[in-house]
Image (tube, rainbow, N blue to C red):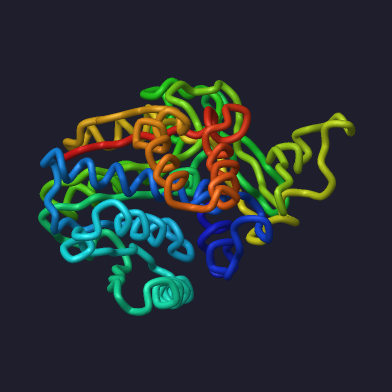
Length: 333
């Protein structure tokens, strides 16, 4: 999976689209009110005194920078004075993405907002920070286990072999007997801990706190979803097989799996963070102030625009789409 996503021919090495032209949708590409709600959460966290007015606002996994830009637009509407004190940062290792983000911020804010970049969290040191990420943990490398065996790729074939003890111990810690075991959550949490003295981290992804007891690994190709094993000889029944094989999609399409939020929480608690909130996306956005933001738009904008944005925002909280399947978890240190 590491090679599939991040290798020289990896999916994220290429200049790919998200949304209608891409392989999948995200909440960011659905409605600007996703970023608006997170902005209000940031403002409320500052008002309650947990974070300072000169905090760093740091997005991880920003793609073109839409989420952070949406947050800034709503900060301008709600608490414009904060734009004089907050510092905006994107953690971005890829040169092409940095260029896109700089251009987007220039077009959006005409040079009024300074965007800073760091290549990794290891480069960041600050007193107070608000970290935000959308759908990054489903893109961490994983091992796929089945009882005491682990999946290997040999040429164009998939085979299960005896798993190493470290992976089995980690899987056992979070009740995973069959499914994916993420690699790297612990290192990520430790790095974030060292990046600031005080922080809040808000992240959204799909998954649950309990192991589903089955494989969730899958491939997205132009909004079509293919179970990974249905692209292999592991599925013998013809009616359940997908056309093609997994290696046909290598590096060309996104590969992902459900996040085990118990594992994620364990990684952050293990380095001293406290779990602050764990909610469905629907509940989180309502908690963060979605209704209030929509009411502001209703009062100030033409009705046609309000109805357009209302319909987009409904997708974010629709239980049958993003509202229940996606979760939000936040940590504080």
